[in-house]
Every structure is written in structure tokens, then in C-alpha cells.
Image (tube, rainbow, N blue to C red):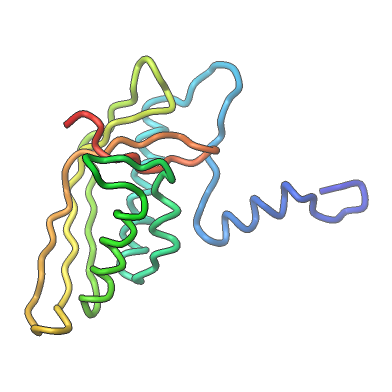
Length: 157
């Protein structure tokens, strides 16, 4: 709050990010780094947001979880976005499940983590009427950008 009892610009930004589900991650200019258990919990929370965005077919929320610099074997941010736009367009009601099985924070760079996860997106194809099961699990690198953990693709394949 400012001296007048009104919220500051920083307060408003935190409130807006909280309302849309983008809880800030504290970044330290100096040590101590975020403990590994806290990093794992923060990334698991991001997968929960991913699951919810998929089920709502909310491309804006989904893409807020992806680095603008996303590179994965010839797929970039816009390609990632288009893949999900197509999925959301092709499928009726979506059920998504993401289970994080391992989070390994990079020892050399505490703002990087590698995540193994199981992922499944299921929905009825609007054209064929058939149920589609999309296994989207694997390994994903996540980076801490601007105080938020974002997907950066699998950089180790």
C-alpha cells in the first residue's frame, strides 16, 4: 500500500497475477536459492494450472506456462500454441491428467529444472465421434523467467 492507503502498482500486479492463477515465485538476487522441495512443489502447481487450462480449453492460460523462447526440436512457441489450438478445436470436452514423477533442479543453474511427467489428454473428436487419447508425457525443461516457472521444451534429447 502507498502512503494514502491505496494499493501500489506492484500490489495491483500481484493481485492480478493471483486472480488469473499466476502465483509469483520469489526470486532472490543473492543466495539462498529456493530449496529443491519448494521448486518441485512450485512446478507441480504449474502442472495443475496446465491441467486446468487444458480442461477449460484456455489457450491464454496455457501459453502463460510456456517460455516465449520455447525451443524443442524444431517446435517453437507459436508451433506449441498451434498444436494446442488444434487440439482444443478438434476435441469436445477434454479431460487432462498430468503427474510429475521427478523434478531435478540444475546444480549449475538453480533457475533451471528437468521434469519427468506422465500426461494424458482425452476427448471426443468432433468430426469422427471417436474418443482420442493423447499421451503427452515425457521430459520437460522448466526455467524460472520473471519469477515464474515456464516450460522450455526437452533440451536433452
